[in-house]
Length: 461
Image 1 (spheres, rainbow, N blue to C red):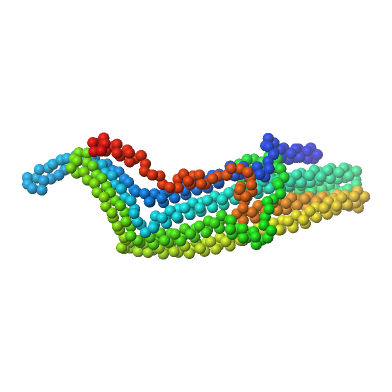
Image 2 (image 1 turned 90 degrees about the vertical axis):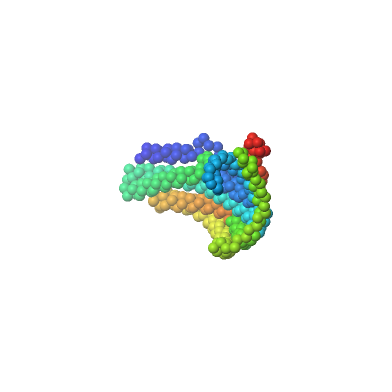
């Protein structure tokens, strides 16, 4: 049994060493920076934001002319209207250029640009929301690793202490001081301690993989976290900050504005539309058929089967929905602040109670050991006291973990869990860089020059 105990302890040590060997010590700041830089969620959300930026460029393009070029080549068969009917064959190669420019559309284009800009704002709020989730996951993974390593260390200590008690009880049994029942009882405690070590090893390995998922790296030796960030002094102040700063609230407010603009866009679709249209047609085979025209065209919908009025009603219904969504979002944000504020207060009170429990359990264990040495207590009494101290220490480690996670969860519920607010000192993603590059639709391309070259080669330029 002694050999088996040594092998088991060695296996525990090796298993723990796998988690730490060859990896540099890491701080919580290191974990947060690594999560921000390596998160696939953030990269995905940034790509989505770039796609949304293009909606603004698309909306701006409606202010510019739409120019199209076409080429048609073929044979034409004509019949004379007077007898005798003599067929006349001819070939044609026609190149045409057309342009359509909206001069007035009831403000629909300008409204579309405003909606697209607000859509970019919504996508940016989504990015901040994702950033908060990524950083909170990193904090949780960091604290889970520290907690679970502490749990494993406590479980190993308990196993080693119980092993010594088992051996001492066996020695006493051999000289007739205790009964076989006493040996069986302490052996059962040893088996329990061994199962707890195995449980803690597995839990630590799960936390290790979660850390890798959250930060993109496997943990080494994790240093003690710094003091948690400051939080508001009252629950009311925390709620006020949340309603002002949380990306979900900002997003919901923008969605209300978008819904309002969409109502105006639906109404604008019923108004007069004025456009400038022009076209040029060149026949490379017969210049007599060349033509060019320019015109101003006004159009207004008379009857569309009720589609336009239905669109207005739909837009108004979605506006009402957006307003209710804003109210519901405010309720959710406030509820989360309440929840994490309460969790933080619970964790603080629990830490105070667990610290007292640890001190009392340690004093009790010392007294029971002294009584056992005098024969007033049994080995099982000692093991019970050691078990109580082990559980108290485990509960204290868990409470400290919960307090730290609650602080960062509260920051997240207020919209403050960002790289900028935490002051991590790294360069962050700049959404303006791509937006400023693509926010307006590009001007005329080189295709116009290409068309001009084609016309010159045809001898019509």
